[in-house]
Image (cartoon, rainbow, N blue to C red):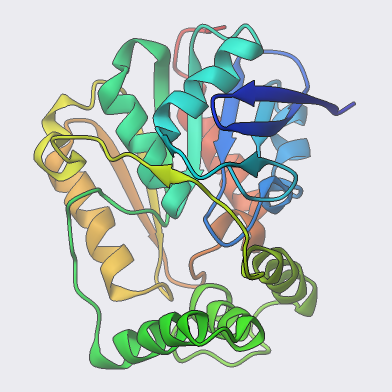
Length: 274
């Protein structure tokens, strides 16, 4: 049974869900959604014998933010501390995966493993095709022009459908869920705070990653994301890289059963943690 609690952090308040029993896994969502993006994956991990903690990042979902500088890595650790978690496996998607990677580098003693799903590597620019960049630029312009509906539509085309894919490729329920979460975040005046970056950047510190990494990239994701996955695999010492040709960016929403199966298999050999 899910237990939602509220965590006050300097300049914000985070909504945190805690479900299941067993070794803890913390889920960190993408920047265009909130913790509900893990709704399909969470019960599968709980059924696999894990405790699953997920939270809304500042300004997302039910969490709030003030216009102050903050560290996303510190927020992740604050969530763990609030739930009395000494060590965790961390799973991140997109920007959440980049923040999770940064946290693993900055505080290696708190994590036992990282699952990086369609993420980024701080300081690394993989490059996109001209067609991909045109869509990304159009989304940015829609935000600048104060057109949140168009921006949300473009986000769904890029990150849910996949570059150049038909709108019928994924179930309408997934497209609608992402659009609703994203549209909420695009409301004028929404505050997210100002996050501080890990310095030096992760791209220059991948050799410091001290835990096993499962990296999954979608074959229908952007060229830049797929390049970041290869950069992570080349730079970190213990990475299992998988490219799934039939999914895009929101991997755990598209293929929760497959993600759960691979993740449980990936974590099974590790000594139990708490």
